[in-house]
Every structure is written in structure tokens, then in C-alpha cells.
Image (cartoon, rainbow, N blue to C red):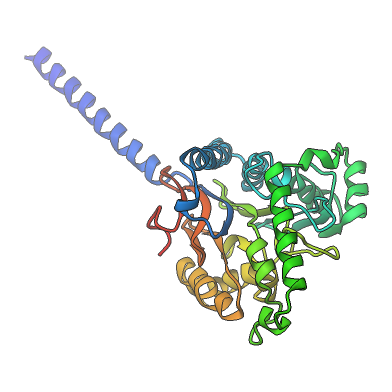
Length: 363
């Protein structure tokens, strides 16, 4: 009888232990710190009818690799800043995107690169523009943020700082890609034909919209960017670009401008933009989205929609954003036919898209 009683107690303890273990396991799972990441490779007139199967697969492969690289860092407790830089580096190193290796050409047949990064915890930021010999401009932008008292450096000054920080310089030949060069030739031919035409130049302008030029509009390409939330609850955003094909006069777009192309604030969200920079600068797009959340109490999707679906089109611009709020919610909003994009959300689910119809994340 005593043996039976002892055995019954023993079985009860084992069962209780199993239940307790299950409850503890579920408790830990429910209370794990949330982390997530999203990237873009530019928004624009991206149509499936103009994309070969092999090229589409190549884009998706690089996007997948980039978002996984950043997510792996986050999963191991790495910072949002580290994840943003790692993901953008992969996009910068690919000739498929207009950043780093795949940068477009200026009118003078050179490559000038811009980038910016922002830490949502401290509101510290760094940016560079017009650099010609930096393989990964996002890395230099981070050095400006972390190792200088400044936020924004330009051209030869930025490269002098880079040398002080131990960056290796690359020749302009590194950035040459045949497809980008041929695109420059087509844009310049179109520009020359328009200038030689007897057509009234007024037809090339839209009187309602400043800076409108159909040739420039057709020649713009997107940027690359990343937003991330780490296990510590910190947000970060980064953006890198080669700018606009056939640009002149040291033109700089929105990508390196904090508040226009990039913004991060732990109180609201992280944003990286892509599109026609002149309009995104005038609309202060990235900060506008953050301000709607922080001061207006709007949610992420309503904020990105108000800016990308209404404000920017009314100005005459187009493009898109990736944004992430402090809870890890993701918005990928664009008003163009497509945007190269990928995300891994707080549940660990990955989505990769190119066209507007690819996912339900954009409508």
C-alpha cells in the first residue's frame, strides 16, 4: 500500500512537472523580445511584362539574401544599426541596384554616391553625398554618425574623412556597369532630340508642378534602404543610392537627407524612402510619417498612406517607403507600378515582392 501511494505521488509530480514546463515554454515564447526587418531596392515603373524570368529570379535572390543577413544579426541579439548596414551592403555590392556597384551615371559619365543612416534610440545620424571612391557609402555614413561631431559630409571632404578612418578607396571603374552606361546614352539622346525639336519648349513643362521634366522623370531610378527593430526595442533606418541618371551640377536627392529619405525615432518609427528625390525633399517624407505617429497618434499604415498616396502625388512626385513602427509593424507603401522589397516580420515570416500585386502589404 505504501509502495502504491509513493508511486502515485511520483506520477503526479512528473505530470505537474510536464505541465509546468509547457506553461513556462509558452510564457517565454509569448514574452520574447520582438524584432523585424524590411528592405527595398527602389520603386518605379517596374512591370512584369518587361522583366525576364531569369532577371526576376536574380532580383528576388539578392533581396532574400539581404533581408536574411540582417535578420540573422537581429536574431542573435545584434543591433538594428548592424542589421541595417549588413543588409544594405549586400544591395550595394549587387549590380542590380542603383547603389554602390550598380550606381547610375552622371551627365559627365561619373558615379556619385549618397547614403545616410539614423539611430532611433539617440536620434544620432550620419550622411554622405557626392562620394566617388567609396565601395559601401552606408558604412561611411555610419562612421560620420559615430566617429565625428557632424551629421553630413560631402564630396572630397567626406572622402578625406574616410581615409582618416581607414577606408579603402576604389577606382571609378569599380562602379561601371554596361546597362547603366547604355541607359545614360539613351537618356542623353532623348534629351538632345528634345532640345533640337522645333516643338514649343513649353510642352516639356507642366505649369502646375515645379521641376517637372519628362526626360528626368523617365530616367530616375530608385535607391536601396533598410529599416529594422532589434531585441532591445531600438529602431534604425538607412538609405543608399547612386542618384539620378544624367544628373548635373552636383545634384543631391533625398537619400542622404535626414528627415527626407531617412529617419528613425524609437518613439515612432523608422523610414527609408525611394523615389523622385526633389519631391521627397520638399515633402520631408520620412519625418512627416514619423511626426504623424508621434504627435498625431496615427498608426503606421495610415501615416505612410497619407504621405505616399496623397501628399507626394499632389506635389507631382512618385515613389515609395518602407517603414516600421516601435512594435515591429511594417508598411511598404508605394504609388508606382512596383518596388523591389522584402521583409521578415516579428513572427519570422519572410515576404519578397517586386510588383504591386505581389503581396497584400500594399494596396
